[in-house]
Image (tube, rainbow over all chains, first blue to last red; front, top):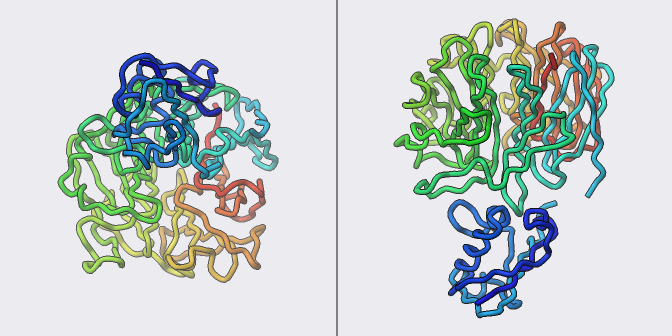
Length: 93
Length: 373
């Protein structure tokens, strides 16, 4: 199984300059997918997720267009081939 | 992103490290401290509450703790006055598993004593003390304080539940005093293994018991390096001095327009001299009467005098936050402060005359000063 993660501009340097990365492995949920991301790109995951494993409050993650918070939170399912879009929320700066 | 201007300080220069809600700035001047050159912004968009200069053992290292609203807080350092910064692969200050806590902000960075070349401390939100003994490469939670039985009763203040003050006793290597809003002060006398509250005489107007063992909203504490028994404390209502290393605190709000405020600075060699910036009240945290006045005591708080020459005395509704005042070690002593309205002021003659160093900065939350050897 594989998933595509779209990396936001501010974090691309931490992903070797990539705007998209492919994750290979098995993920039942976005929590699992973030763990896969952490295996290949630990710096990116560290900026998205706190020590408690929670997505930082001003970070949004969309799974095939749906906010993960609307479809089960960290338990939200991800299908094989899903697009996982990471975006900073409209705050800060 | 904005263009960042870098500065090139030289030996003998004075450095101002200015943390704001939208990045950090580094300023330099020669020892006359009359003309300042500014570098920055560094970490644009991130709040920088904690900054420090580590000049121990030939280092010329600046520390900063930028906190991005989106991506969290990191501790970073520069050995070239801001031209380049370390970029840790993952957050270097982290709560360990089992604490059920996540780092929100780095409030305070303090290099260890001169005898401890590679020791650093930082105070964070949620309130905790971290220590590094390898020059900042790795950090460990000081568990003696984290596991204190009173910690579950600590409450956040307006700035969150933060550790904002770390005082390494100049004469006793095993003694550290920290201050937390809103928990009050805690002291260790065994290098951090055990801690006890130390707030005797300090009011907590917002609690039913006005003099609890802990729970005060201490805003800032300054300790004399030459007479460590002497400290000054600006409280959330209340201005205090101790002459017994913090065992008891005496009210010294004599001749000030308000005993509410945040910042306090102490003279490096004269423990009878200190500076504060009173604010109207907790409900209106601005300078009283629209006058920006630094108050100075030269007799340990028996009397405070306004120092206003060069400061706006009309329609100046300014706020100087707890870490936004710094005192240098030159002769005569320089005093510096920044405001929430983005102004930066300095005096190179102990407060007699002030000049505006910068205007239009983002809200200033911290000002630190260093003299480059």
